[in-house]
Image (cartoon, rainbow, N blue to C red; front, side, top):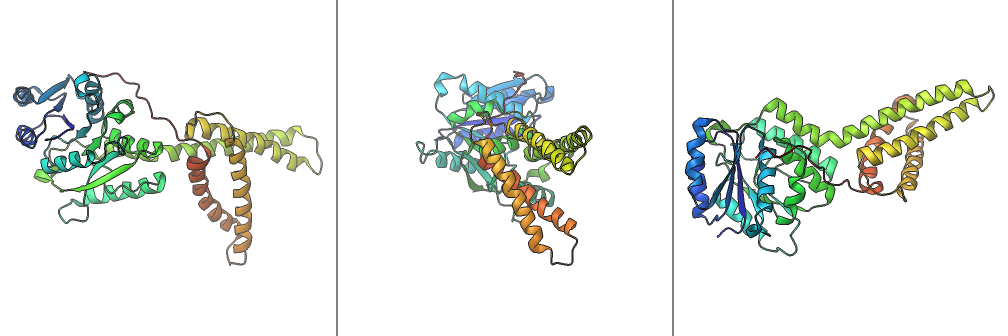
Length: 366
């Protein structure tokens, strides 16, 4: 008997969804929430048949709103049912690629240590080393997995899996995350990593039915949205650095023109420009990039301590490498590029607090 509520978003599903739902019921699923995400009229008989099953609840979007919105609306619906208070949720795709036996295993895994694992996100991960995996799926997942590990210090072998186990305690924050389509699932992972929510995985069978023709994933648009979420924090950091560098240059030019001529004119202009540009960089990184909602506290001291440390390491590294037959300017570019990534990492995890869960600003379409 499955203890979890099964959530299945569906857009123009085939009749396989009926057979898949019946198999889940035979495996012990007592509560199945299916979201009709704006399917065409010819698919209405499928949802009508499913609605006749006492285990099924059908939610309807009048127009297609995306997988992310379908999942969030299902979470909100579940939170509104008092009889379901405390029940965990398992999300699955409507094309039957997530086998019922894997859902059963995930449900059992989630129930093993409920007291200790209440805030743990569970993922059913495919093994991408198997031969039947399409090259496009294998390559895309490997790229996102590597980037995710580098940017979020969390190793996930299948970042795009739709089979996820979510404890009841996480439904409310996850229902408020940004993302209306496939990028929502990536946002769930990034926010879990930033919040320090443990992520556990179980290996599942890899099934691609009819060469994955039932998938509604848009390779260009949805991939762009996914990588925008994945790289968004780092790109904000790059933009902050660019703005700070521009401000530093403008302030230096202004100070140099206004200050009286003398031996310390350039030094004074440099100090003034760097002081104000660094304060701007600190403020922008704290409030916009890493969304630290706490007071300045010790973070500003840590920030300037990091600035001094990076400056000394840069100068020391270039000095040590200067005997090489390479121009010092090029050595500095290489050293500072490496330090730039370390700078981002240290600010993100050791100077600024983890950002809060992102709030959605779009209303439900149910």
